Image (cartoon, rainbow over all chains, first blue to last red):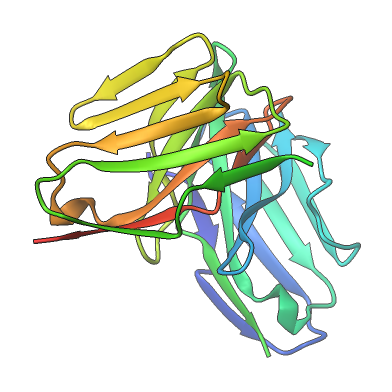
Amino acid sequence: DAGVIQSPRHEVTEMGQEVTLRCKPISGHNSLFWYRQTMMRGLELLIYFNNNVPIDDSGMPEDRFSAKMPNASFSTLKIQPSEPRDSAVYFCASSLTISGANVLTFGAGSRLTVL
Amino acid sequence: SQKIEQNSEALNIQEGKTATLTCNYTNYSPAYLQWYRQDPGRGPVFLLLIRENEKEKRKERLKVTFDTTLKQSLFHITASQPADSATYLCALYSSASKIIFGSGTRLSIRP
């Protein structure tokens, strides 16, 4: 298995532009998580899905952020419009629930820079 | 409010010594706790999971303890090596599959 695949790896954009980050989870995993990592705030949970259904989006910072999971093999995180404070590394992780425990497998991350 | 705190931002120790990292939490009752390793430019990688009814878990040179009374987990690396240098993150299972991370401890092992 190729693991969790994220794209793009790097994105540089200007304030006000729309940004779409993509994630392909590991086949067979039933949960998907989006995290954001910055030096100041560490690794923050934005939203997670279970069986393609959003369970908790309380970590999504503002209405500018939205996430979808149209099927078990694809998810997107969209920021519209983007702002400089959105600059961070965005990680997608997937997991399989076994005996009530989720062990996360992370992608390599998408580094976003908003100028 | 709910908090996860890792004792120090950075820890420097000499090769061969035991590294001990601390994770404290408040206002959580996690069913289990996990430790991850993160290298620069990469995503975190799972190391160990310990459940609330377990006191200790081992894997090779790694050992994790979990004290639900103290609300604390300790992560030990014995016979540390320069290759163990990385950031180590603790993560709590909060509720309904929600997994929350601490801010991490950057461990440096000097030869």
